[in-house]
View (cartoon, rainbow, N blue to C red):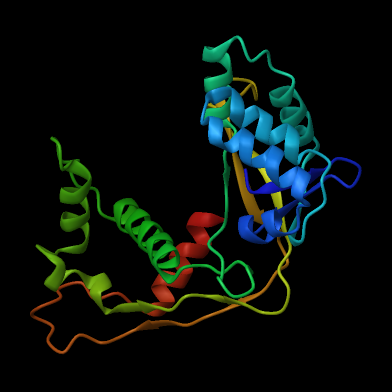
Length: 239
């Protein structure tokens, strides 16, 4: 609920709640306080309506056209249909990017990049090493251990892969889009409720470091990874 919508510009402004309340006059503060104090499902819709078409200072983010339609549909719901209201509000959540607290610019966590590198590396190993797929509750973990020849964290080859957070260079443009689930063979029709994400628009630049250290002993890590192999497998897998 920490945003206001500008329908004419197809954008939202994400605001700081304390700053927003401080800018309200005495009359609006009283009305807003009364709505919040109710603590009911219906009062959430009333808060949306209170925020509607109000101005606020904060981070401005572009939204896709479907978001405005979704927003208006949510506000027009019949509050007497509590089940529908609850379902709609539960799905009307915007997942933000990771962002810097100081200026709210997005950054890319190093752990996310390292996970992406690991996925691509495992895909390459699986393609070149035809081994039986393990069964059971921990099948995926057992498969990783088999492909990379390790038994625990201390012998995991990715222990030697160091990835920093990737920090934004200059201003970074983002947008609110929908993520939908389209199964193969469904002729492009989406199934299930969509998710709403803040995404980073392609063309923005982030700076960080990826380093692969050499293990001190070949006996500890049996299949050490190489930086060039990681980059090549990532290029192949994600393209």
